[in-house]
Amino acid sequence: MPRTPSRHSRPAPSKALPAVLCVVLCAALFLAVYLLSGRRKDASSAAVPVPGAVAAEPTAGPTAEPSPTPEPPTELAQTEDAGQDYIDRMSFLGDSITYQLASNGFVPFTQVWVPESGTLALFNCPTEIINYYPKDDPDNPRPLSIAETAAASRPEYLVITLGINGVAVLDEQEFKRYYRDLINSILENSPDTKIICQSIFPVVESLTPEGITNENVNKGNQWIRDVARETGTRYLNTHEALADSSGGLVPEYSPWDGYHVTEEAYEVILQYIRTHAYQ
Image (cartoon, rainbow, N blue to C red):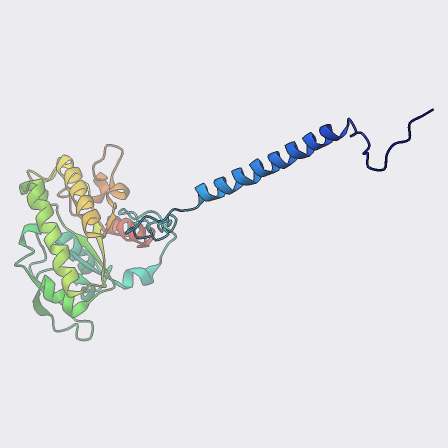
């Protein structure tokens, strides 16, 4: 006869219960480890204040510097024909070649800065007196220094054509010093004037005086170009319009002395100036 269990007796524990408890405990332990490691990671990534230390100011990223404005080229390049109006707004400072620009009627004497003698050497510029013809009183020229002429005239453009005498007797240092001082004296008295340093023209060597050679002319033109770059002025290479295939002056442009030029050459010079305008 089967035994009737007492009311105080308990059923035997199930064999699956320990396995379930083990799974629950493992899950709880894994969760605790996960949460703890996350907190440690957050704490380690946070900035830890150091006593007495000053917090560093946030630094801005690198700022791109503006591109520098390119300087205009020293040598005037070919342009469209600027016309006669461009020539009319110019003054011309130079030697006897410049004087004949006016005496041959290509420009009025009010646009030409030359001494009464009709010639000018680069090394005489500091002391030479210009026979200045005011535009408002052209019949009464005034004797002024080059600096005073610049202050009185204040031209929009000034073409300087000097150096053919200088290359025969001056070395590079002296030549550049005279030319640089000349430009500075003009700009000090007329700062808005746009200065064009015209090249020395080529010569017919078989006719020229001693020292006036195409070799010296070429050296002088490089010196003028250097000074133009140093002073922020412009260089006009009219030399190339007057030279023949050998680099000398076209013989027909100066049949008598090899460097003073014909009216035909002046037309070439003025056309070159007009088609290589100041930019």
